[in-house]
Amino acid sequence: MSHITDLHIQQFRGLRNLHLSNLGQINLLVGANNSGKTSVLEAIATYCRPLDPWEWLNAARSREIKSSRISILESFTWLFPQAASNSANGLYQGQIVMTGNGDVPVREVVATLHEILVESIQENENSYDDERFDESSVIVRGADVTVHAKMNMMQPSLFSNNGAMTETLTFQLREDERFVHDKKAVYQCWQ
Image (tube, rainbow, N blue to C red; front, side, top):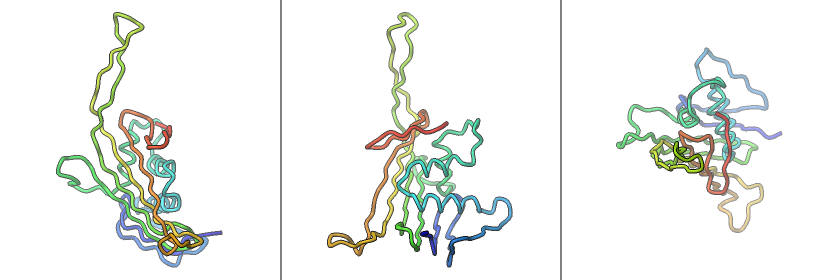
């Protein structure tokens, strides 16, 4: 069974510059309430599967009550470090950085979130004619998310960089929709 031997969480939720060293197959996390134990587990989960958007969404939504009115975008933003001022234009920007070693292929994960304003077209039913719809556009909040994962290849090749390669996942979240928009696919998620 593969496992992580060392993990450095530079930024994830409220965690800053956390080093976990000499990890074994079984490790215990002990601490007071609200000390970051769950954040460590969420960081490990996203570190091990950085290119799976469902893993990121699960980490973002795992603490929410099912009937919660918090949007997916807001929950996802809380995975990233929160600072008093993140950008000059008032839109949030954040970065998660984690590095590690062990028998897992992942060596480094860098995730960035850039809050954006997106024009969303909404269909409004015309009260005069049931078969006609009017379209109107509304500006909604969204976020562009990019995850870069530096992976250690098991068999180095002539064309690889010392047996390492970087893979990238990009997707977009929107405040008004229950979908994660990827350039290649659309993933439906829960609200």
